[in-house]
Image: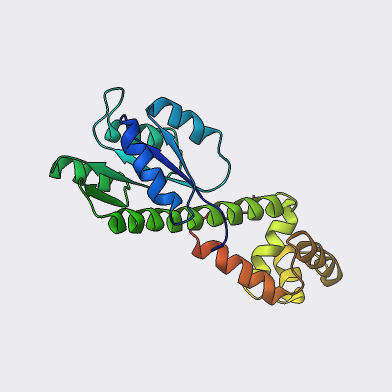
Length: 213
């Protein structure tokens, strides 16, 4: 996951500021895309499938940084970000953090502080992307299971034997064994223990597992 490339977007209405920040990132081998238009930034976010993060200027004429952050949240666009501000605006900083901003840098800031903030949101972006991929993979596998196989999966998760599952659902142990084999194959695991670990990782990530019904 540490090698996964992350797109870094910089948004500021002053081109010279963007040029300086992009140069700083380029000096440490981080490529950045720059935007003077908040709407152009949002359009680019919508078209980006991989992990991305952003640094937003707080005060811009077309749309403030806070308004831009809220737009991302309202549209369900997952963009780990931090703010840059030439003003010591404590209420704005509080609002930004409440909406999920990772940091708030006041201009002028030290180059290393900016790089640290970028690395922080890049790390968050990788983590979020990995969780999305994991959730999508889980949903693809779960979608292959029939209602009966979902019931068998629940029983396997709880460690029930084939005989116990057979009594629970009023079917033969041999039929249960067929369903168990299908569940393992469709979930792309080799053993019940591997399946239980897969379910545990999924539930630890906070995603909901479909219930049989």
